[in-house]
Image (cartoon, rainbow, N blue to C red):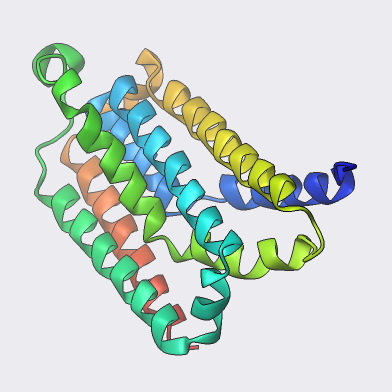
Length: 210
C-alpha cells in the first residue's frame, strides 16, 4: 500500500489551522495554566488530545455520518456542549482568584491529575468545533477509498499534533513572567474566563438552530 502523503498533508494542514484558532479547548488550557499550573495544564492538554481519538473513532466507524444526517442528534450534541460551557463559566466565576504556587498549588497537584485530564477530555468531546471538523472536513478531505490503516494513522497524528500544540500553550502561559502577570488581575481573570465560556456557550446554542 502506498501511503497517501498528499491527502495526509492536506488533512494535517486543515486540522492544524482549526486547532490553533482559539475556542473552548484553548480557553480551558489557558485557565488551567494560570489557575493550577503547568502539570494540570499538560494533563488537560492530554485529555483534549485523547478526546480526538473518540471523534476519529466514531467517524471511521460511520457513526459520524448518522449524526451528520440527523439534525436532532447534532442539536443534542450542541446543547450538551453549550450546557457544559455554562457549567464551566459558573465554576470559573465562583472560583477564588488564582494564587501563586506557594500559596495554593503544590499541595494537591498530583491528586488533581485525573480531574484535569477529565476536564480536557470532556471539553473537547462536547466541543461542536471538533464534531464539525470530523463531520465535514475529515469526511471531505479523506477519500472513501483510503485504506483503513491510513485513516487510523491520520487520527493518531491529529491527536499527537493537538497535544503538542496545547503543550506549547501550557508551557508558555506557565512561564513565571506570564503567569505572574495574570495573577495581578485577581478575580478579573475568573470573570474574563467565565464570560468567555458564556460567549462560547451562546455561540454554540445559536449555531444549533441553523
